[in-house]
Image (cartoon, rainbow, N blue to C red):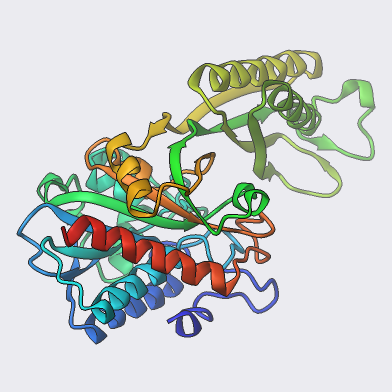
Length: 396
């Protein structure tokens, strides 16, 4: 499975993946998922929001145990973030069959669409739509960098966008959702454990900072006469790093656009996107407030107008303690429990469905990069752990 999936959507120059929602690379990944389901004789379904399902047992019976993750990527992302969870889910079903396990509850593998939000700027679109956390009006307004709307992209990929929306009947059939994911950090590497259990997802969000200045000639405009938004933006980046470090939080400006974007032109507009996360809501609120204050104050000094828009936000997610504790019992009680600053479909579903997560050791801690990796023995340990969990939950 890994060998067949590995080349799909991979950029030859960077070595990273560009599996953006509703693009040819995404279509290739979807075809791979469907083929894996059919090869195993599983019942394949494509839901109203473009999420893919592969069922072992009756999809309508209810109280199902579901596992899976996503196959899309960030720009030049790594091979493991998302795909490891999907591949491991199919492998775990294979393991259950080899054990002769007889599930008393339906089992399913799911591939949630557009989890990374790389194309339309909003993470977890497929699961948000299903859970009713993304309204139809908001979904229809989502656009990519070329101005293509989400419905247009779906239609071009051969899917009917008129069908999208909340899917409470489908989610009501799920008794538990367990997502396996490569760890996006080094906690397991430092502890020497191959597999961990998630405790919670930090609150996190994305904010757009628009710095409006005045375009002018770079070679003729005196320094004192400039209203340079790039200067305000640069100061805000430094402020974000300082405020986050002092608070024990995270803040990253990872995307920027500039107008008119000329080498010899002072920009008229610099637009930067901030990603910020913290262990608790109060800390995150404090960090964002201080970054916004620093941006506005610097803008006043530079003659730059600063406008800030929160584009997305996910509050802290505490995974259901009973299910989390059950995973610990099944896996022997010595598996470490750790929090994460990364968002996941499991976090979106947690308000509707009992959810839990397993992490597989990442020896470098690198994620969202071609350097992202996990050792094969650790991946196989993750498959075994997931199979044990599925057997413990579905074969009681």
